[in-house]
Amino acid sequence: MNTTNLPTTLVVLGAGASVDCYATEASNLVNLEPGEYLALPEEMKQLAMQYDGVVKHTPPLTVDLVNSLRPHALGCAQLLSIIETHAKRAAAAGSRFDFEDTLRTIFKNVGSNMPDEFLALRKAIAKRMRLADEIGMRVPTLYTELFARFNHSPKTQGRQFAVLNMNYDRLAEYAINNQAIKPLIEQNVSKFNRIDLFQPHGNCAWTMTKDQLPQGNESLPLFGNTTNHVCLNNPTPKASDAPAIALPMYGDDQSKTVWPQSHVDALKVQLRTVNHIIVIGWRGADKEIVDLVEPILNHIPVKSMHLVSRSSRGTSEMRTNLASWAVAPDIDIVEYSSGFREYVDDMDSPLEQLYPL
Image (cartoon, rainbow, N blue to C red; front, side, top):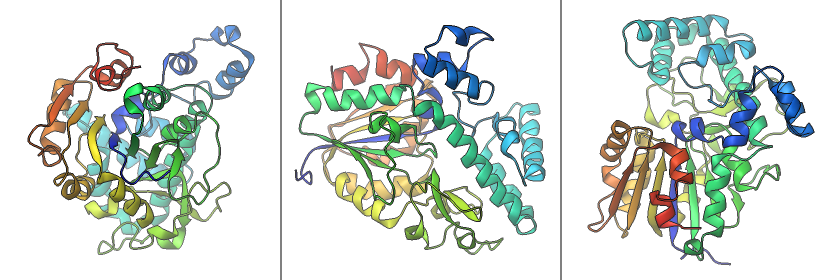
């Protein structure tokens, strides 16, 4: 079927979406008290026992970053200690710990002296994220519920969805593929029905060779022009391969993306028919993504934009950062500050009104 002219819903997923994405089954699984696993079905019991104390429902790029990475920090213990020092200073000052800004500062000061530690940090993050994905492979998440609604609501017939995922994890991918866990090796975009997935910041299963990473040269963007050499969802990465995740080391917005050009081109095609936008847990602070989407949306009649966060402060920040996406004269902007879970489950939420089941 030719989908070029189908109306499109642009869905943007930020860190706030992955933090909240585990549905009741998974949340219960990762928060079990000792002995509670005995009442679980056998498959769930084995999973709970295997990952008890390791897999949490909050991704690692949070205030608990250091503790979540320590078990996987082979070769980057010194770098983690420096990051932890910055986190403690932020806590003592009562300010928010900003991992990205902290990493830029550290890299600027000592990056050229610690290239192996920065590479090891990439590997630790990718490994930790893969462990978190183990639950998403087996049990439903809020992503599962969201994409099921996209596929089954009578209001979504004849519509396609472009999912722009800013996270490194594969939870959205598993949900789109209906838990089938089919490896998507060397495909430009993972597809299930009318839902296409794009990951500008990379993926914990994507790899690239170590020599494609610059070593302390601030004149180079993080991945240079090598993004078309990324191996997507590599099932057997070599020990020398680097995870293709866009850690912000250079303070250059362009360095925060790693997706191949073919993904960028495919998204631009879909953006031409966008009339609904749903943003979940993403502040809109990634200027390179805002700027990529803006000129296309400025020439089409977008009807609605839902901004979903855990607080009114969050939705207000989203509205400010994404003002350039909302220039259509009759656009309906909804700020929903009750979080991702309520947005999906509440029968009176804006999602239910837009795409009822």
